[in-house]
Image 1 (cartoon, helix red, strand yellow):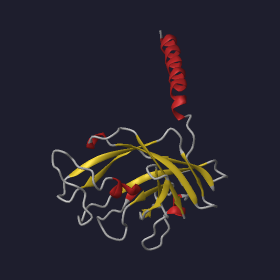
Image 2 (cartoon, helix red, strand yellow):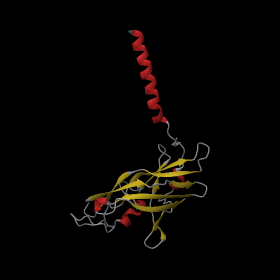
Image 3 (cartoon, one colour):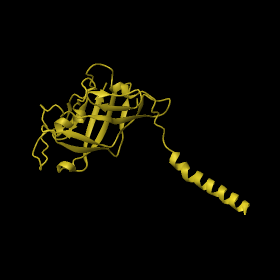
Amino acid sequence: MMYKKIFFSCVFAIALLFACKKDYNVTPTYAKVGVAITWAKTEQYYSPKPEIYLDSIGTWRKFTSFAFTSDAEPDKIGFQNPYVAGKGTNALYMNSIYSNAIYTKLGTNISQDSGTYNTIIPKCFQFIPKSKDTVTQGTVVVLPQDVTLTRRDKTQFVIKIMPSDQPGTYNTETGVFEIEVVFDESSIGGNSAVKRRYRFKS
């Protein structure tokens, strides 16, 4: 009887090992590599020359957006105003995109004179080097999340951002990274998969 228990215990352990193995078979991210600092320099009011491609007029438009990273997660970049507590920035040009977005139940708009209209995205993009030895180039992925925007009357609405089918690319030597972001605007009666292209230059 004891031999049977030992046999079944071994079989269970082996099966569990194989079942769990695939969960750990993932691509390393080299999270300790400080790539994001290229586009989040420790300069006062630094903005990594962000641009958005406007399909309506077929051109790139520049805007200002303060970027930051952290020692804890040097592979990630976020957007907010690190110089004024609680203040955001024009993250992903969202303040401009949704400046006239009306929430039908309330009928109020985002306003430039609102103290909290600025948008904050603490962790927006993650940089993944090609390999441990090739960190100057790699891919950039959007970290899916809900982004909260605030109106003049302090009411809020949420726009979800998600990764596109193809990840973005970065190159620390040229100082450029490009990426496409998917926006879910269904909360304000819009499309659930609006794609917008961005590029940033250090």
